[in-house]
Length: 253
Ligand SMILES: O=C(O)[C@H](O)[C@@H](O)[C@H](O)[C@H](O)COP(=O)(O)O
Image (cartoon, rainbow, N blue to C red; front, top):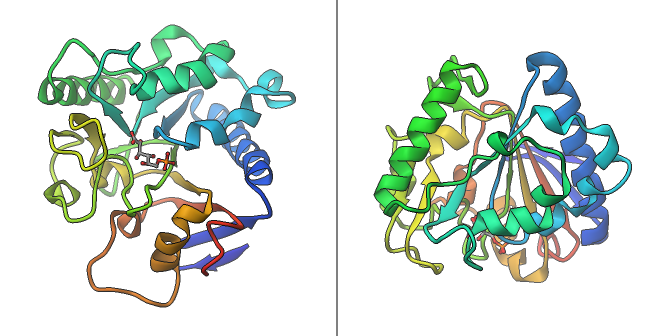
């Protein structure tokens, strides 16, 4: 494992091996935080990340993890009904949440009856309640919520969450959750955590697989540094950052 300024970088021979390691990483953190805080706050993205979590819902982890202590959040969500094929909730429900004994009240989907702006405000209010009740930790350094782990994918343009290159939202400094109505990746309307929240995390895994991401992985981690930072290069948590790459995504490093 290489350790750089941009975190630990792990490269796996295949996406299958990446998925095995990602399951162990998540299960180990679950054990640690359940012991320390009696809760484990997990933030997921949409996209291919969800498929890469498949080993968590297989033995041994399906039986060994204390799912009753899990609290699941979305780093970004498309503003569509929860049963719409574009919904990140539906993606995670079908592949993951429907297979684990997590209390329904610990799954924090957006309110899909609201506009993008309303849904972002509503999600932020929900997070504020959870901070008050100590389910979600708060960062003493930043004053923003500090999630135990964020499991994030990255787009081929270097976006993370719904924070896209060149979009003003990447510079949001006050809000916890905000909205976008002109997302370059469809659908247009989304809500997203902001960088202050992302970067207050105790742990972040950036999970990137496939040759289609090799150029942007090279741009993010390789020697060539352009002056305009990609959103993925702005991921810099208070805690630990670990990259999970397969060989194809790392092929240009
Ligand atoms: O709702 C979304 O679109 C996602 O949360 C988004 O941030 C995703 O993680 C990246 O676009 C990577 O997606 P892929 O892994 O499918 O390329």
